[in-house]
Image 1 (cartoon, rainbow, N blue to C red):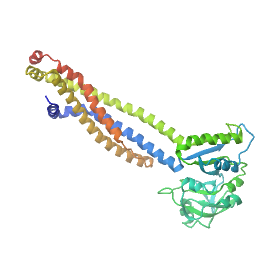
Image 2 (image 1 turned 30 degrees about the vertical axis):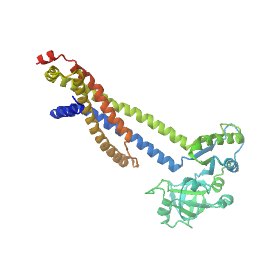
Image 3 (image 1 turned 90 degrees about the vertical axis):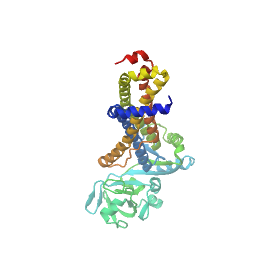
Amino acid sequence: MKLTESFVLALQNIRNGKMRAFLTMLGIIIGISAVMVIIGLGNGMELYMTDMFESIGTNTLSVTITGQGTTRKLSVDDMYEIVENNPDFFSDLTPTVTMRGTVKVGTETLDSTTATGVAESFFNIKDYQLAKGRSLRYVDMVNRTRVCVVGSYVDDVWYDGEAVGQTIRIGSDVFTIVGVLAPEEDDPDEGGTDDAVYLPYSTAARISNMGTISSYTVTVVSEDVADPAVDVLENALYQKLRSDKAYMVISMAQILDMMNDMINVMITILAVIAGISLVVGGVGIMNIMLVSVTERTREIGIRKALGAKERYILTQFVIEAAVISAIGGAIGIAFGYLFSSIATALISAMMEVEMMVTPTLFSITLAFGASAAIGIVFGYLPARKAAVLNPIDALRYD
């Protein structure tokens, strides 16, 4: 018997018992769709995390000077010297000073608005675009001028789009707004990225009575040199401070890799748990094929009496089990796409984040291959039982 004939016969037997075949496929359908949705969720989470970190800057290093274990101090000039002496690793630097004073426009307090002292390079590092006025300049750092740049939310809500030239109060100090940033979010809202005020770090440090600045953001020339750049920076800081407890250097790329690794481990565990239903589906295929062998015992006896060899009988039943499993896999893939779309819509609606549940070609291939393999593996035992039936006993079977 040719393989095509076995395939056609398998389809006929499935057609003759549609409901039984569908119930047999159900475990495979559920397992395949669950695995696809879970893997798709993992891919979506990775893409979401990557996009989020790219907005922060995966080519940046965060430096915190704790001062523990040393009496030495690190000045801003020292940090600039480290960056300038290592052009193969570092491209830019900005000190950052977080202001604790309240932000006010007139008599109104902006509770959610953040005020941060930064260098003129901050906006290039963050890839923030200027919409109006001018940015902060080096001369503002040197002279500790009381000027600032505000986000688009502050400009639109509190100044009706006319913030440039107006004043804003931070604590007890009044600043002149010299520039407005372009929106970073599609719908700027309170407390978001666009609800911010940026002033010269030197001014912020003086107002805050900060002896030394302890927080810096350093950009590396390429993500490929992020790891050696961390070593170079740590060695340079050790030379300045003489204590490895006095500083902390964190690579955004390393954090992203760690988080993606954690996501992959979690998704793998969930996919394995979901894959258990595939095994259950395989047991269902084995069960229905055993029933099929019992029901068709006389047919098997007649075919063997007419000269059918064991391998033909074995092939026929294995193919039938594989076809049932493959059809279930195809239906499961269709449901996997459907459930992925539903999951995407639910995540967007409930969590208000743009994250796509996206099954990959690998997950689809894996799912379909697993379904076909399960059909073959779990269909072999019933097929073997059918193949070794004694034709005389089979013909006598009632």
